Length: 596
Image 1 (tube, rainbow, N blue to C red):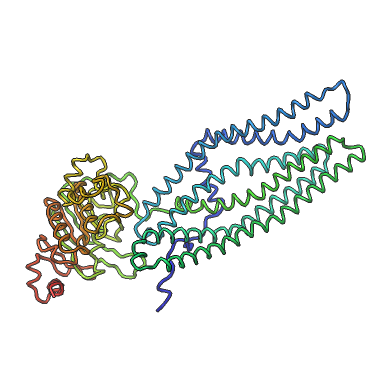
Image 2: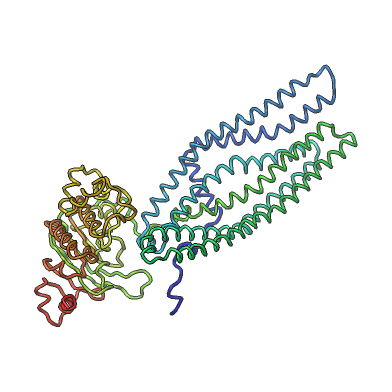
């Protein structure tokens, strides 16, 4: 078997070039500017805190000089008061900054995450089909916490580190030129080296480790979602082995990543030792020559201790920021990704009338396929007509209803509902007036009441019960532990297939949409349940335009018209009796197979 046919389509294997740091920083700055006043306060307090930090070594040196003079005419207490006052002011400024940053960042994180969720929801079904849901969850939550890390790190540590180191270096240069030049040179080399290593040495491995992390999250979600299948085949050990291998693949990449972090510390330690030796050594020489006081030497030692601490912090924080930029880049990429199916600017809402559907000279083909599925396709479905679609797998039945819902855009022609081209109205308003009952309805892990009311969330309990009764669902619901308040489990796993179908039909009834679509709604049901669902379908379709896709021909005998699809064309149409009367027809052959 050709392995190329089964290429890994997980989004975790990068399909596009990673964003540049500047692109991610631009996205991050846009998040900061959501609340400009609070952001401005953070900047002010950060600068104030940094300025105070720079003055503390200067105040310490002045206090030592006063004490060293030992003159009774100059009391040391004012210098002591300044030294302690600066320490108090430093902590007060940091407190004010933190108390401002907490509401600022938490609000931005909530907005950023919500918008990422909204953007991902708008992506096409193809995008979601080729993407692990667990990976998307991992990327959004990872990006949310990455924002917190970057914001706190940059304004609390990284920027103060840069300003303090250069501020002290400039102060030294103003007092002792060569001491300042030496200190500034070491600091500049240290910063540039760290930034270059972060960009070209650490980042590539960061991205590989993040990809494995996303793959791990996707695999975990995939296995948990399919836990019923896992248990039914007794495959717990096999799934554990698969996950174990993925976990150790992640471990290999993470280990390389962390090792690179540690490797960069060698440079950091060398620069710290060089700064220590140079600063203190230079000032001891100046002291010996009488060009520096004991306070100046204390200043140099204090300044070194402060600068070395900030150098270590700078090296670590550059790595943290780079790692966080790589983690938030997925959300930034989502923000740049165009919607595959997009509303026109200022598109009006769809205005339902009677439910007339018309395809006019429609050309359509799926992306990546060389030939079109539909070419010059024409079809009209009248208001209130019950139309069944049958035909071999891949003949174009499901594509038809997807185009009605505008889940894909056509290449040429027009798809119109009540005279309105589906591309000219908003997608949400269009789909609210088309109720779908799929073959395997997906219910949310919420109450049955909430699931039934999903298409009409403001419906009262009486309307919900009436819809359930019409869908033949009320009796089984009342036998559940909490009735309509019963939680159905993830994807509705607590209910049987027939029960989920009837809840989905109740949902369609309550939405009161003029167009109903049943996509093989009875194909996996037993005979008794199928009869109940058919009764519900017969009742709900009265007065509605109904499209029924079916493999079980018994469910469409009463259809007003049956359309037989083959390779994107309608090759036959008519009632059940008319079509079965054509012995050489495709429908007649399908009916013969169903009865055999």
